[in-house]
Amino acid sequence: MRALLMAGMILTPMAAMADGLNGFVTRDRLPEPPLPVLVQGALVWEGTCQNCHGGNKLTGAPKVTSEKDWAPRIAKGINTLNTHAIDGFIGPKYTQMPAKGGNPDLSDDDVRAAVAFMVWVSGGQDAALAWAQETQTNSETE
Image (cartoon, rainbow, N blue to C red; front, top):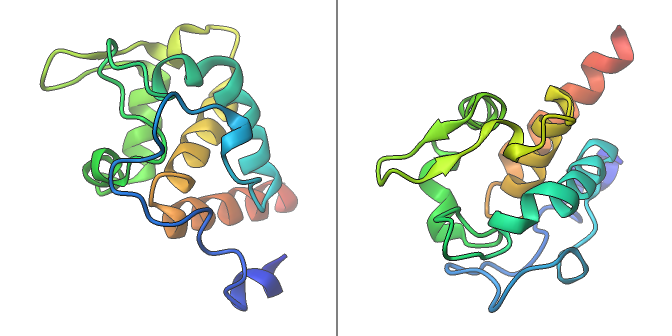
């Protein structure tokens, strides 16, 4: 897998889209992630996060694939996004990210994987892949 990443074959999950895919985004409209932790994140996203981050304008949640909406969030770093997703967060426009997306059955690792997946499909490929590779390396050494 590293050879493919190094060769640049799996760097961009889709063509750059400032505003994201048109309409409500479902998993079948997204590329298949290259690493197992991102695949797990895609499953969690589909089961919980898609309801808001698929493009439900009423929630104020950033739509996956919208690089414009995700760029300032990605700039804060995946660790900050993970904290907001796990613990909950009230945004500057009083939009709310409920802890674990409102699904208390999710583990912290499930939430982290979903965040990485969302970052990966929303313009933060380098950050998501680096996080995923570090997570995989850490789990292999434990």
